[in-house]
Length: 232
Image 1: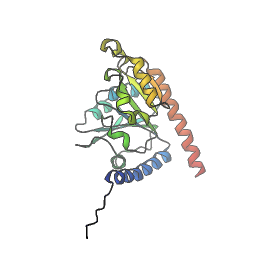
Image 2: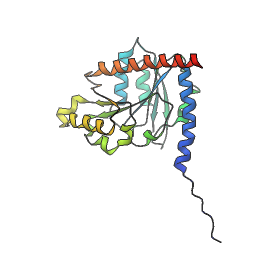
Image 3: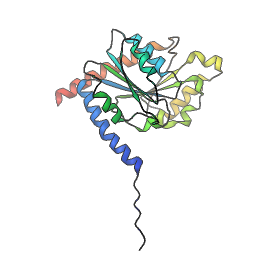
Image 4: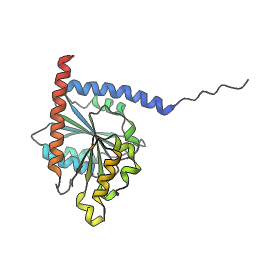
């Protein structure tokens, strides 16, 4: 009699377990009326610089905190805290993404009841983070012009799941010989439902439309959360 071989889809089980925790996270965020943004990009696209510029622009307008994800060090969390904003560092070691359980554990010691916006800066990676729901309200992908216009086509899943794609470092388009319009066209092709904005977090070019978009998203989410809580 031949042995029976049972094959178990580890990836499916891991994602199912993650989804259960993500649902619990999302329920908590909705209860608090809190907009949670999952910020993703390849390494070096400028997520933290964008966060710094965004936090400065929102001072006095929104109450913001940040959860940082990196393989090692708390350097990014230090940069955020230097602006007077609370930050929590998650060090993943060899894991190439954040998952919902990591966020849930962080929330045990990271208060969110007095916030309007929680930004989760994910580990720099255009592959792994796209598969893991954290319980976020929005997914924002940052893509640097200098990375090349082919990135959306090489990593379509990340871009396809984005609510907004920010094309950063537009000030480097000309000196690097990059084709900004080709990059925007490729983003639109793989992510037809996403909003696309081009800016430079370093120079401030294009920042106002991004800040306005984010402010509107926070206001709309808070309003819908209040209505949901009343109905419950």
